[in-house]
Length: 160
Image (cartoon, rainbow, N blue to C red; front, side, top):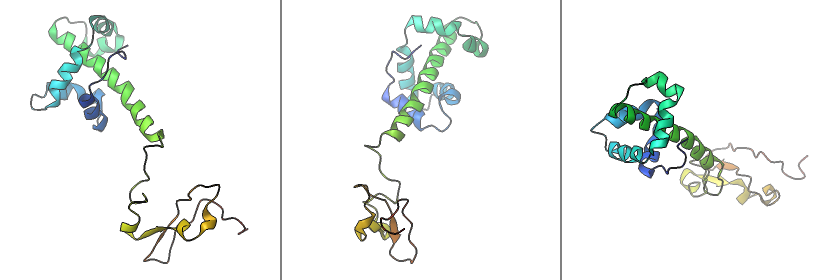
C-alpha cells in the first residue's frame, strides 16, 4: 500500500536496530519529545499522500485500533500506521538480504581470518594442504595452546 515511498535512512536504521520493533514502539517514539528521531519520523509521515492515508482510514485493522474519529490526531495515527506497515514489510526483507548476501558477510567473531592470530588460532588448512577440497577452504581451526582441535565437516581424501 505504502511501498512507493522511500524510507528515510535514520528512521529505518533506528527501528531495524530496535528489538521491540515498529509495531509496538513507533507510537511511543513518535510522541517522545526528547527523542531526536521524532523529527525524522514527522518528516517521514509527511511523505505519505492523501490517497494512501484515505485507504488506511478504511482498513479494518486500523479502524479496530483507532476507531472512526476524524481530525488531526486521526490523520496522524493513519500516517503512523502507514509507516508501521512500511517498516514492518521492509525490515525483515533487509535482514534476510544481509544474511543471504555472502559477498559482504564475514565469519563470526573470532573466526574471521583477520582475528585468528589474536586468539591463538590457526587454520589447519595452512598445515594440511589435503584439507582443501575442490578449492574450498574448510574453515577448521586449532587452538595453539590446547591439545584439542575442531574437526572439519569435510572428508579428508584417502583417510577411509
